[in-house]
Image 1 (tube, rainbow, N blue to C red):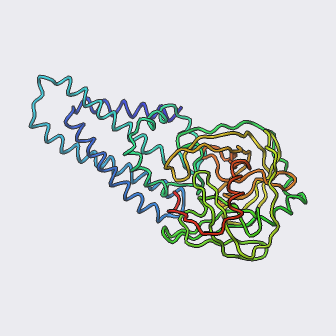
Image 2: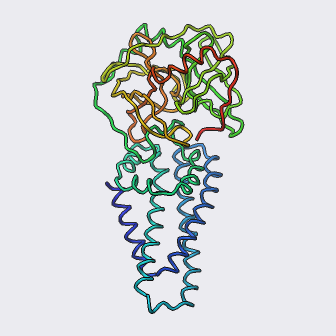
Image 3: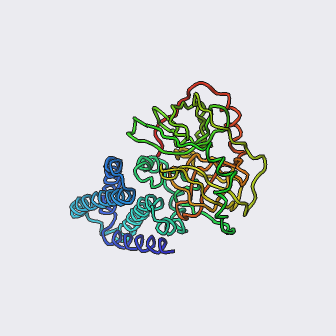
Length: 392
């Protein structure tokens, strides 16, 4: 609600200024705004990629975009003022002002869109929720031309706050079906403890973007580990850390649409985890197993909220994909990606791959049905495959 109030106020204020200044100044301001934004995006990418702290990175990126966009607008407005003094519009003054108001209102709408996207992936769930609860911003997003969207996509890597893909889209609000509390003692049961021995840490090096990516995975077949595609995207080398030590791995299967990859790990002798043939139901108990934050192994009690198909962007944000997923009551962060969603008996229900930016207690896992092709094909694959460019 508050986001919509801000949008309306900005549009009204800009429209009033545009009405006062007229068409020539407003068009000049619009051109300056766009030029400033283009330059600002390039600089924001350059600076953002060099800042490690997520909150600082998002703040700097937003500040650079606003500063350059409004700075370009101010400079162009000054030029427009000089031009306007040489032109007389006495016969069409009212039309000039109305058109000026419309152009300036357009600037305000674009400014709101430019600021909303990075804030929607803020590390603060409250800020993200405020943006995603807006009724106006999704309408603005739908109206933005693809050329502007493609340009803005270049800063996605710089504003990514979680290292996790966006399942629903940056301005789409998540829904959370209420279920009971997770069973706290479940992670310490013998079945889950035993299953944890087959969960590995995946560490991938991406030289092309000077990044080391941490994720999780699990053994599903002899010498084969399942993980997420976004964990190994753009990597030049991959290794898995197991209870028996570190081993080199090769990506032999990669489905970027589903966001699942298979690693071949020669000499890996850990037991394979069985795939649960039954679909979990709402309020069923589960465990999210993996290496959150790239730290030590953790098994976290969880609950199944809902299951079903969800339509949203792929992890590269280059298209829309429909995936069969479980929505979870669990706290999923960077590093959990690729880890198994375990049933109480230690079998695999799915693959953890994302979380909601506007609710820290909503995570997502691909269902066992969604990853069945990867399990079947990946178990037999032997040749290294391309992992593309770095993920955003």
